[in-house]
Amino acid sequence: MKERHTKHAHGHKNPAPAEKTEETSAAEAPEKAAPSEADQLKERLLRLQADFDNFRKRTSRERTEFAQRATEDLVSELLPVLDHFELGLKTAREHSADASVREGFQLVYDQLMGVLGRAGLTAIDADGQEFDPHQHEAVTHLPSEDVPADIVLHQTRRGYRLGDKLLRAAQVVVSSGPSIAADSDSTDWGEAPEKMPQSPEAEV
Image (tube, rainbow, N blue to C red; front, side):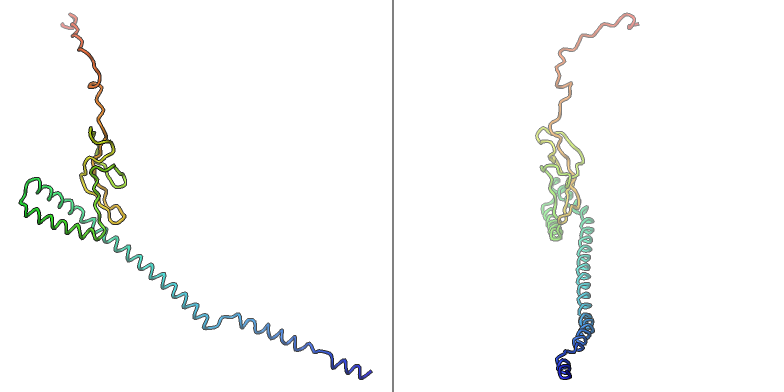
């Protein structure tokens, strides 16, 4: 009987090591989940890089917008100068000014337009074009027997675009089409009626 008890005792497994293993795993789990100092520094570095990239893009965009506004303001100030330059050249041609003087001023004008063209300035030539309210400003409408309605008869001031932006609309005179004859011109009234004699009372 003693031997049987002893044999049973030797075959029985001790559950203590299994409980110890479970306790050890539970204790080690929080340590594995917590990020190391190197991981924290790496995450901070990535955030700083993202913030710096956003700052660089924003600064570049603001610098570009500032340059565009400065160019737009400068070109807008020069437009009246171009108007007077063109008017002077036109007047010189009409009054047969000295050819060498006209050629000199034309050369300067062409150079100025070349510089402004490289900055993105393009002229709007509206003569003979269909009226477009998005880039034309109608100063008046005139009847025309030869030009259909809503066609530009004459451009009184040149318009300009700076890149894709309308800097100044072209001032134009627009055709209203053939004029409508007045009723007095289109109706045959026949002979004028004879003058009615006045009554004696009227003569008095």
